[in-house]
Length: 99
Image (cartoon, rainbow, N blue to C red; front, side, top):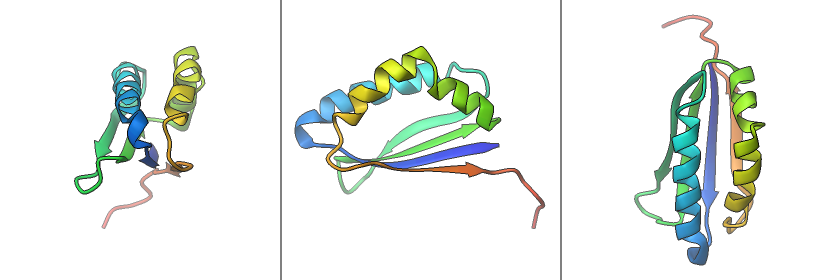
C-alpha cells in the first residue's frame, strides 16, 4: 500500500478555482487502477485549508496517475491557488505485522 497526504492553504481569491480543480482531480483519480481512497478534506476551522489523503495499491500505480496527461495538465491550476507551498508526504505503508 502507498499513501499520500498533503496540507494545502489556498488564497481566498482562488478558493473557488481550487475547489473546482480538487473535484476534478478526485473524480478522475477515483477511476484509476489501484486507487483505494482519494479525498480532499476541508479544515472545519479554516475554510482556506485542505487535507489530502490518497491510498493506492502500489507506488507505481500512484506514479502512473500523477504522471498522466490529465494530472500534468491539471496540477498547475491547483498550484496557482496556493497561499504558501504545499506540504505533501509519501509513505510506503506495507504492513510488516499486526498488534
